[in-house]
Length: 169
Image (cartoon, rainbow, N blue to C red):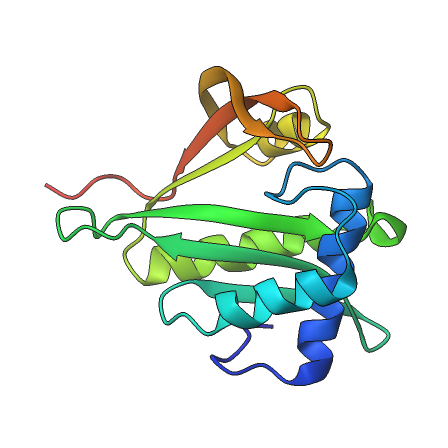
C-alpha cells in the first residue's frame, strides 16, 4: 500500500516499530542504537512530510510489518533515476515474501513513472546482498567505511543497480 503524504498516527507508530526493530537487529539504516520509538516516530513524521519520496508499507493482520521508499534523483538531467531506501521488514515477519512484494510494487511504480534505473546500498556481508542479487540487482561497487552501523562503527557498503527497461534513444 502506498502511503499518502500525511499518514495516520497509527502508520507512523507502525513504521517506528520497524525502524527500531531493524536498528536493534544491527541493520545499517542510518540510526544508532539504542533507537527509541519516539525518535523513530519523529524521523518518520519529518520524512513523510517531504513531497518527493514515495513510501510503501506491507501489512499483516492489520499491523505494518515492512516498508520501502523510492527517492527520485533530484537533478533535471536525471529524470530516469531513483534510489531505493529503507527496505525494512520486521524480524518476526521476515521470510514471508513481504520484502519481495514491496520491491515488486516499488519497481512497477518506478517503471510506470519513467524511473527505469534504480540504485540502492546495503551493508556488505548482510543477508540482503544475496536477496538483492536473487531479485535481479547487479553489484557495481563496494566502499569500505561508507556508513556507520547501529553500533557507530563504520561498515563497508555494497552498491547495487537495476535497470527496469531499456534506455530510451
